Length: 180
Image 1 (cartoon, rainbow, N blue to C red):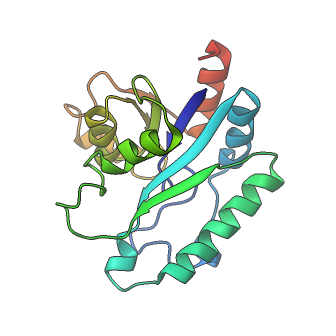
Image 2 (cartoon, one colour):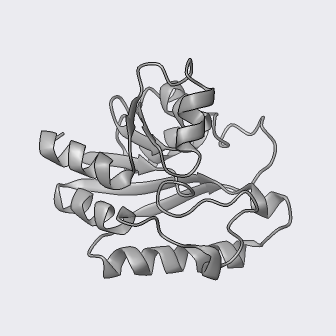
C-alpha cells in the first residue's frame, strides 16, 4: 500500500489568514484536485491531516466543517480522484498531541490504516507540517503554495533536507515519475 498524507489549507485549497469558514470560501489551488487523481491512479491512498482551530476559536462549527469537506470530496471526485479520509484537530491548545506540529494525528492515521509511516510522504506548507512529519518518522515534503514560500524563506533551518515543490501537482509529477 502506498500512502500520502496531505495538509489541507495551502496544499489542496487556497489558504486564508482569516480561516476558510464556509464551503464558498473553499477554493482549490489550480491543479491540486487533478494531482489527487493522478496520485490515486498511481496507487496512492490519499488522506488529509489538517489543524482546524477555527472550530476551537468559534469561527465555524463542526457542521460547517463537514460541509466544507463534502465540497472538497465532491470536487476531487469530479476530477477523478478520491480522498480516503480526513483527520482534523479542532483544538487551539498547542499541547494537544493531535495538533500539528505534534505527531498524534499522523500516528493515528498510521494506526487506523494499519501501516507504518516510515518514508510516507507528508505534504504541507508550514513548519508545523514538517515537524509533525519528522516526529512521526514520515517524509516531509514542502509545497510553495499557501504559506510554503514564506516557510522556506523564514524557516530555512527547519526546512533543511526537505524537498520543496511548486505545488501539489509538482509533487504528484515527481512521485508518479519515480513510481515511489
